[in-house]
Image (cartoon, rainbow, N blue to C red; front, side, top):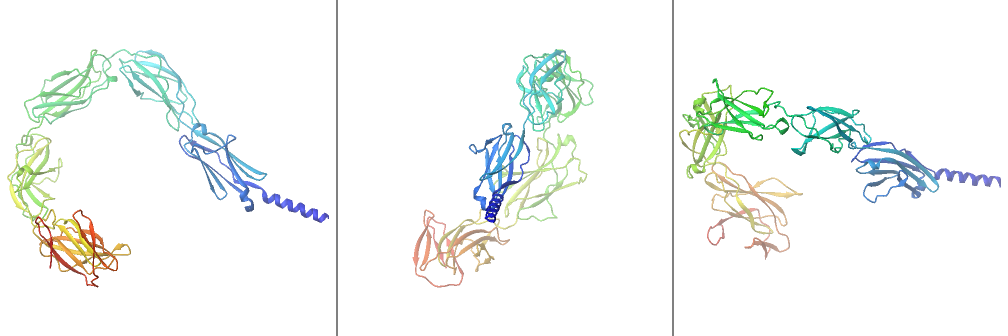
Length: 578
């Protein structure tokens, strides 16, 4: 009897051992930024016979997690259990636990999730002092939300534009809670502060209740980007970037504009009272003359503390007086169907000839049959200070229509005007490859044939001599080798073809190409499938562009051949088969 009790005890002990469960991979602490995804994973180990008894639950700070809002997703990969927390927020921080149970056996693994966020806005922002052109600002930091505050930024606005906030040029360390800042004269300022950590920048603090108003002063600077514009003949146009209100420094802000011809001793000047103005114009009696110009900032207390820079500019351009000489076709390069080569003498680029900044040439061409009102223009830009200057200019003009009588001329360009044209020359482009045929479609089809129809190309690029037809067979879902059909169509008035000897219920791709004496053109293709069935089905196109099905007796196998169809352009259209 003793042995029997021992056997029962051992059986119970082994059963206890095999029923235990434990978590192999313990959860690891995580640090995530707001908006990121946090992922915990734990792997439960147990006897395979107890797999159906295993239960795993996830908890956050002791509360069971349930995916009621889409916040969490729970995944299982064999015995690996995964918790995903989407778009983590500061409130998601805490202790997360994976609890695995098999009957009375339990194992738990826990880890901490730290969520880092941007700092909370600083508090208690105040102006402690406001003297002259400086102010002292103090504040109290708020929570850093898991990441140490590294910097503070002071922002300010003025009563003139309270919706526009500007950031002070200097930042302040994260352990600082007060700062002295310099203020531009003549403004009423309010302040707010933002904090920055490794995650980002906080929302702004509340705006200070108190304001600070420094006394006015003369401007500290002058307008930038001062230059002249040359698009108006007989005018000197001076342009600059307006100065922001913060830099006016006092009432009565204005611009004082000065100009004089280069080499002159005396300045002319004018006052522009509008602070937002960005230009001034004055009539002059020269074309593209060189001027010295400057623009000063002033207010009622006086002109800027800084001297204004003097800039060189030009008055408005005029039409060039120079005209290219000896304009002709380049005798060393024959005219091609779509390209012609031209040559002419380089113009003298002196200002008196160009009456502006030399840009290059404008080449004009048009069809002789249409006149110059339908001319095309091509700008030929010459590089400034080009070291490879040559007495002649050589240009290739592409994209010309083939087999066309054309006329061309060239003129000088400056930045805004084009001069008188050169002599006009006539030339003729030779034949080229025609464009694609139009409206290629299936007019009728059967088990063994197809009837194709098309229209001539929009761009014949010469005298059409006929059409070529070829096909590709579909083999295992792809089209095979291209096979040309004979005889070729040698009558350009033939605009259709009946192709016979095809396979039943088979996929083909037919190509139709127009040709001239010069070359065949760009092919156009159409995919068709022959009819199937014991009777030979035939389909004919109706007026509504649908195919109507008819039947005719099966004619037996034929060799592939092509029959030509002539489309008669009359009120009624039909095909004559030969």
